[in-house]
Amino acid sequence: MDAAALIQALTERFPDAVRSSHAYRGDATIVVSREALLDLARALKGDAAFQMNFLMDLTAVDFSTFGKKPSSAFFASSGVAVRPSAELPDEHPWPGPPGVPNAAAALGAPPGPARFVVVYHFFSLPLKHRVRVEVPLEENDAEVDSVTSLWAGADWLEREVWDMFGIRFRGHANLKRILTYEQFVGHPLRKDYPVNKRQPLIGPDGHASDHS
Image (tube, one colour):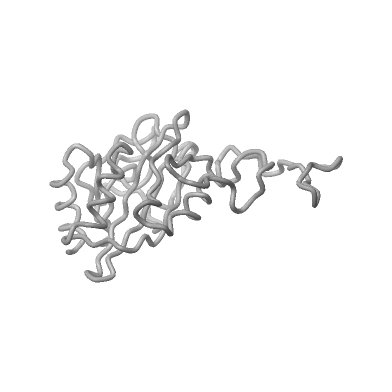
């Protein structure tokens, strides 16, 4: 299936779950509620029409500063630098933050109070098609179901998102830091993480030293 056909098939299969969609530059992208993620993921992997047996990537974006200052160009969720334009093809654009055109917001910032978006890139090895799934999360409830029961490779990817963004994954068997250490304070890829923050130095015994 091409991008448009994938979006249509998933929207028809999950009409109450798909909150937005676009096929900008041929990339099929759907935005879904977190409550529907596991059901949709099971269909993506198990349905003969999709066969998304490869989880290519799982990451997150912090949109807390998105649209807060003027910019002549920005990076949309497609991973491509684009300029705000009313011609970006989106069937269901979100109302973006102040000063950001709706079409631009449709490819970027999540709706309403959501601060984070968890992003999944799925690919079908047999059928050679792909889809991006985005799940918006609010700052005070940044938690979503783990997909490790479907794709074992999600294990370390979810741990990285937890470590870097502080987003929790329900059902993950070993959700602990993977790039930093357990005594690390904060989550470095959050936009409000202080650039010059000092962290405790941990000795060979696993305890903090007297210097930081």
